[in-house]
Length: 396
Image (cartoon, rainbow, N blue to C red; front, side, top):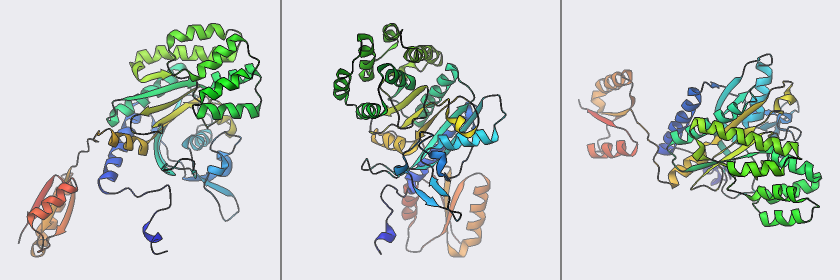
């Protein structure tokens, strides 16, 4: 028990000193990108009623939620995902709004999963939700925000893989796949086991066009030239065809934003969040095996809260982004407008007066009494370690 007092539970960690400063600075940079696009801040509770994240809504599985009870016996959960919380808020506070609502957030999410060793159970997310706009232009704006945010962080090499939830849904319907088979197929695709997908397809009685479309699930180099062929094969399957046309229209908007080089189409993308209805995407870079950003369109989610409103959003996992930046030796360009004032005890009045004056000038000032056992070099070394840019000594 004594040792436990100094340790954190599995999946959570302390963040302190320079790492904490860098993380807060990075969060501020990401937040400013969202503000530049005209998004407005919202804060939702850290815990919500259980039904906000129920299986009917299609969010995180119940077994992966941190659940507890209030005094009235209601089941509460720590939020595993911001999107349902913001959907609830939008339905409550913007029920009669007929113009697009643009919201952004910063906060922590909690997932009680032990599936992946080393994955944090508490992580910080920065994201945005565009509510009330079902256009391809809205899809492109969200992707542009993602790209601008990652570039602003200092990241140079990354790729956003974009798919479409209706492509997979259309395949399931066209092939007559039942719920149990669908779950097997989802598991194979999630594990990138496309040999298994091939075997799965062979067991189905599919025509050549459907076989071709199923094989696109494992195509990581799907491009706009491939869309024309895929559309021909999908001419008898309206759901699949509509998804392909949506990606085709999106590619034109990506050119307008000048971000096409950061985007690739990957029709095999599926999500554990079943509320996605349109484009769905994940962002990857070197130095982390997990996506640093996830998002997509969820046109039916707000229906659960009483508001019919098409929506799309994304979330950047700040901790994963920090890890990727560190492993790629990309320094967060942290600017420290700070000072250290060291004063002898007999000069306390002058030292405090000087520290107060520097604070009024806009500096962050650490003021400490001079320990006789410490030299000027000791304090200079301390300032350097703490990224303090200005050091002053006040003597009697």
